[in-house]
Length: 481
Image (spheres, rainbow, N blue to C red):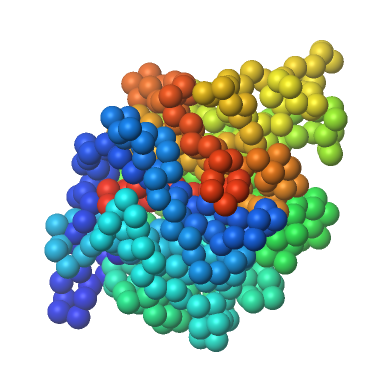
């Protein structure tokens, strides 16, 4: 609920509400004690529904770093992925607005689950199911991904294609405050070829979305030929906000293949942000020009490594997730294949500086058959610590930062088909979740040796841990007006 539009009596409906008045105020909020984690059985061979795990992250609790509740869903084959809230910090102080419901789109089935996290935060419950047939009938959309709340009380969800997985069928779904399907957000004829993530900045009357690929391609696993065939994206789409007109398309070219997560700076007055381009492993900065058009430039590049004993002669880092601290000082991203998590100082957004790096998995860790080659022809692998006696599986994939910026939580599942392709051990043995401690003064990252949530030991078998959200005070994806 954060686009700054007004309600029928002329008052801005979200001038007050839950959360915090500003991003900086949010940083002084209470320490997180619980975190919700989407856990996936879809695609693993275990014939069980996906579920939402509640993890205890209170170091003073006897259940610290354990799953303390599991909300299983009614259906098989959902592939829970990203999530969002029904209201956010732009509604700070308004008693009629309540960050109560977690919105859980299912990437494969097309269902959207609405979860009540307030009645019992430790044991959230299923409030409503938005059925895919209803969404398709009223909008033609399928493969829902990112959700954000709007000032009208509506929920907006990006959808990556039509029911047959065609990329040209993508667009933006609107749910009302009771989670009924209202229609599409963008104006007719204003849907680009590919969709994925999106973020809007009301003060600049702009929304920017990214472009993964055609669902019909990515659901089968990654095939480099599909990139050459034009089945994956390399564009950012600039819309007018809140009216949904596609104003500009930024072609990122060969340096911006598979642009995924998209983030503006949290300060709502700022007119700059970043997108992580997975395949080319570049962090691209976008920014507004004086004439109100938008431009882009590569801000950070992760060099592909020359490797032995892998499917290709070179391995990209594969930037799959990133986020920005609430004070806009630090940017964090993961390299899912290389296995490292990075911290950059972005106080000068044009010139990020690497200030922290840690390896927590990856295909080139010691003990792996894959070797990286240095320029002089020697080979090397990365040291990856064991946590509580456990060898780390997979690579870092999703990240979530505490409000104060001092704790970075990490899971390692990307998408079940891609997990099986690149990290078969992850599917067989399950995910895990880590905590990385952050130096917020000078910069620096270190793995917390006391925190390890092992999804290998789940009651129904190993599961794949994906996105994370804090109940109530989660402001990391909020949009301020």
